[in-house]
Length: 316
Image (cartoon, rainbow, N blue to C red; front, top):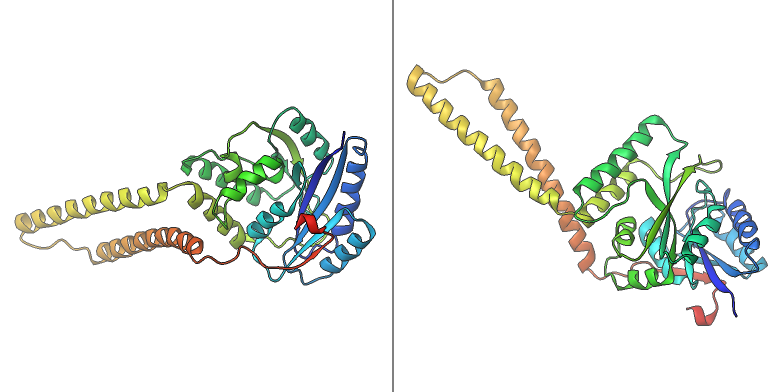
């Protein structure tokens, strides 16, 4: 009986300090499973400006299990990830970041769960080496996204997961080139299981993630799985209109009774600024949904692959 193939998928952007370590660690973990599984290690480089591509090219020459997708420019982590998952040939695919914050040793636990019949096995971040402020911002987002979503969103789950090849096949059917993958995968159905773990601090290199990218990713997650913000905009608009109507009646009565207009230039100015701010917020929310629709209709390629290294002709 032929061995099953496990694909290890690692997205890369300026990770020259981490590439040798993630390669060697994965090799050590998968060597321990060599009697039952073969593996490939697929890297997707999102137009790095350091020596990442050069290092990966050298590794591919030394080890045929290493494969590289080099993109023509930076298409963003989600598109790069989705395209890379499509290139994986394994019976199961494990996504593992290059920074080794997620322990590669858990791949063994993932595979055990997969062999028990689970189609998705994900790591649940029960704790992480991170500052108090950022840790609580993430926790707040997970809870807020879950409460706003019309679908299932699993708190404290990132990209560290195993997916059966059936899941990859189902992802191909979804015509969304910038999906919130955590939510999409959680709502595909099929048996899924989570394994709690402690997420380590990055030891080498510098993360490319910043607050803007976290906000962008978070908004995409909420908008992709919920229309409640649009409903909230409508409800808030109706509520504020009723308050404004009540104030009009109140001021009219005061004018009739007191024969003078109540003083309140400051109050009026504050109210104008308040309502203007509310309008801008909800216009922004509507704009986010319109931008999502626009990005889906212009029919651009998801990514452009500049170079494929280590792939066989039958894999393309």
